[in-house]
Length: 605
Image (cartoon, rainbow, N blue to C red; front, side, top):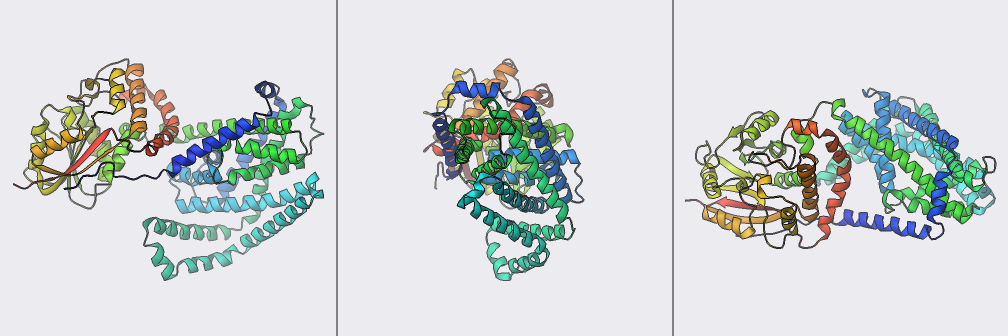
């Protein structure tokens, strides 16, 4: 017999990167604010020149239009309207600003696939093509801007002009001859030794196959003869962006005594383009805050602007662009993923997919569904866990002792859903290979009788997996839940939960041999869930108690979802940020989870 508590090692890399990004943002902003004061910053925003702001916004919108038109040409035959594709483009802009090292560019592929079911290889080819044409359009503009700015007289400027000219020529040659050399790349990657090596690893194999398909799509794109149009549209994208930022820069610095004629647009263009290099850094401030402003200040001081002007204009320009792109990006997310704009998702899934606790439970339990066999899910609730587990394979039956739960689960899963008594299941002896008893024992009076019944239905040597609330000493959120007014009745429980020893003893008494013990759903995940339950139970529902077996600390029927749809929409927007926050769980050593899981084998006899 072996027991392993907290045997799931997790990488801390992502959360450490998040903390480093926050630290960089805070540190750089504190450094910059040493040279300015809040009153000056407030005056800057109060004295913005709004006619120039309107020009900025008009050019910003035209840039989105050019970018969307370019994507439209790169996605022939894809049934997406212009405005729908514009929404995808705006969402892409949102994540480009938010994520480091231009990782947000990949959101374009993700949104196309999730919202419009566009194949990853088709979205990937459009993404790569747009990236290449962006660079081809950018380099000659940089050469012209440097040549017409004070930087041309310096040695650095001359070398940059040579570098950018060379990069433009190289990329242009690559695009022109892509139809010839890309098939050779496919032949090289298709070599039996390379193919056999990458297929040893599942992830590498998937990336390899998708990569081959993307290259084929790029070849097809090159055969359409639209390179000239793509280049002109890419010029439109770049010119719209940098001219709009010039007018935004003027709107910010006009109150400092600058006029439109006193500003060299080519200097501003060069400074803006060089500042964008900071977005390529693998580690930067959160959403670019701090790193972008600091880079802008350094570049514009180099171009001869006063330090205070450089810092204030950097903050003004960056914050206004962030507010613009985040507002439009969030609005586009709502419009594109609003349930009315697509086939309505079952209400159970729409709620549970954004429950950190529920989805962690699904992830953990899915890891124990391997191969074929007969599976019994006890405590199907509204069918969400069973919905995901059935996708992993096997022959499934789901049961519950609550009539409404059975009705809702049948609506989601269809066949294989049965109503049972708490201690009497309508199955013959030794029918199932695996039984998953999911958050069920804490809801019934006679848990021993239930376990004996599960033992009867399980084959000799079969496995029983049980999850229950983990209730033990030294778990502060259990204490806090009581202080917030959450009694076990609100959860539909007849007992608060189980300690490790109590549940192991109960299993051993009823003919099972425990062989694995673990906990999950740790402090921050449980804490977020507790706060959300409190808001729903005591704020939205005004402390009403549901009389069903599963309590009422979350929406329990479609009417609840409709009634609180605006609150749930707000939570849907906040969910990605809560998900990131919950990753703090992996920084705390010996952090016990608030869900207890024990696997056991049936002892013959």
